[in-house]
Amino acid sequence: MKNAPFVVRTFSLFLFLCLGLLPELVRADEYVDVAQLTRDGKYAEAISKADSFLASKPRDPQMRFLKGVAQKDAGKAAEAITTFSKLTEEFPELPEPYNNLAVLYANQNQFDKAKVVLELALKTNTGYATAYENLGDVYAKLSSQAYNKALQIEGTNPAITPKLAMVRQLYNSSSGRIATLSAGTVTAPAPVSKPPAPAPAPAPAPAPATPAPAPVPAQSPAPAPPAATAPVTPQASPAAPAKADESQNQANSKAVEEAVQNWAEAWSNKDLKGYFASYGKDFEPQGGAKRSAWEDERQARIMGKSKISVRLEGLKISVNGAKAIVKFRQDYKADGLTVSSRKTLEMVKHGDRWHIVRETVGA
Image (cartoon, helix red, strand yellow):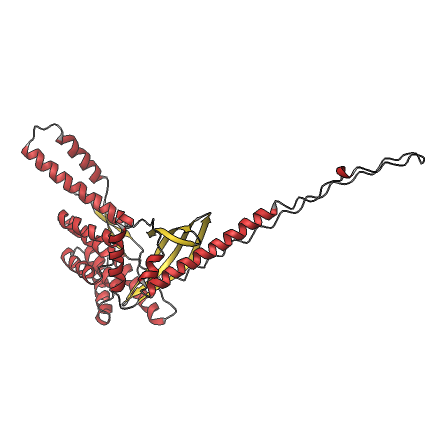
């Protein structure tokens, strides 16, 4: 059986921001140059330019990542494996190097190794869809090998052949993916969304015109109209509930934003008590992990850093009663590492506080 090809897919998790500093712009240009040389098939030039950059900044993860991609595309699998292996050792919190290492192992039919490193990628980021897909491909290949072995031992078993055919079809219809960075994309902060302006209250309906009294003889004075028949005026009352709802939504949006900012601040200050208090009792860690295991893992990650900075940009808040969805870009810095990613928080109001019940990266 031929192996399904493992192809390249652009994955823009890392966005190294310029922050208004000229040196960062220069670095971004160099990332773009190396990525472009790789796309043009000029692998030797791409690797040489990456090496020149790394001579002064040997720990830079993005340039090392781009170098590994160029090495892989140039057919230098062993060198690419070394590059990505070192990245996983020095930056174990980044899932992409694990994924690329797994693809290289899979291309060499080392599926057991590929399985191990893909599981490490998903332990680092349980929302990494590319790694899940590649892990499925690896499982399919391992299943195919197992069925082939069973067929060699017991070729008369009629149940094996259709299973093998199904797995072959599944594997050949998919392809593994090697992640690449977005070549040092420099982005401007997304504008912070403003709450929609309250809709103007409907204009009161005009009172019905009072009909002119019919002329009557002078000797017969017109009877006074009964008080009960006086027309009822302007129906402005329905606007009151609408204004109240709008006011409540704005208050909830403000409270949600404050809760999210407090969460980011607690994370930046390594305030574990405040950080964990931001999550509700019904919080569901991604991947089905137990809450206690998730807290132990987060505590080790946070306290293992000497300094952390978490900044949120472009908050978009949608409130529906006691539930809210918050989407934003998160800029994370820790011990020389800079990572920018999209994040979604699902929140629920408990009493007078908003808590996180679900957290998704890359959404």
